Structure formats: C-alpha cells, structure tokens
Amino acid sequence: MRGVHLQPWVLAGAILLAGCDAEPGHSQNPPQFLPVTAQWCLEGPAPPRCIQLEVPRGDRQHAMGLQLRPPLPPLRGMWFPYAPPALARFWMHRTPEPLDMLFVRDGRVIAIKSAAPPCMNLPCPSYGPDVPVDGVLELAAGQAAALDISVGTAVRITPLPDALPSAPAPD
Image (spheres, rainbow, N blue to C red):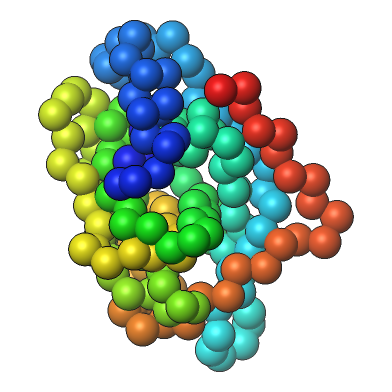
C-alpha cells in the first residue's frame, strides 16, 4: 500500500489490506500487473532511454502498487501522479524487491530514496520528502544510479499514444 497524507485513498488502502496475510506467498490478493500507459524519456546522449510506466488508477490500484511483484526489469517502472501536489509517504509493505523511489515536483526530481528495502511484516518505515510532490516514480533498485538520475534531473512523463488506460479497480 502506498500512503499519502491527506489523500482519501489511504484509508481505503488500509482497509483493503487489513485482512491480508503479510507472509510472502500467502496473500489473498495476487500482484497487479497494469498496462504500460506512459513513458519518461530521459534527456541526454543518444540512444534515447525511455522508461515504460504503469500508472495506477483508483484507490485499490494505488494501494496495491508493486506489492508481491517480481523484480522490475530495466527501463520499467510505476508512476503515481498527484494533482494537486500532495505530501507523499511511500512504504514497502509486501513489496519483496528493493525499489528506487523518485519524488517529483515541477518537472524535476526533488528527492530519491535509493534501494528502499523490502518490508513483509508491519511495522514498515515510510519514505518521502516533507514537501508536496506532483508524483512518485518507482524503479528497480539501482536504476536511478544506472540511468544517471539524481536530484534535479528533469522529468517529463508522456502518455503513450494508443495506450488504453487501466480501468479503475472497484473500491
């Protein structure tokens, strides 16, 4: 579950997961695999490097995030947009692989939590800057460094033409 202060889906996500067994491999809910509907093409030397992004919609998809997912391949991630900007706190509950979390505001990376460790059992720490963000990108651990992404890197997320957005999960 992804927690965001002052966002209504926090409570919904907590309720959805309250009855789930936190042990690996024993979940009542399978991991979600969303279609790729956006991308982030990094500025810089050729060849272009574009990260293909899944974008959750609705409370349930936000809450599930990358829980129980196998490792993300290179150039693949999940984008959590916020409009209006919000104070975002993300955790790794039931996420078995470490992730890089990139916090974005006004088209720039403003904070990075590199290799956030898995947390299969509560309580789990949460990560995020103490300022509102426009969105959060999750990538496989080490991808931010491998792609030379740092605080200040420009971020421009674009929808893919012909991509069908995932339907909001029933809440």
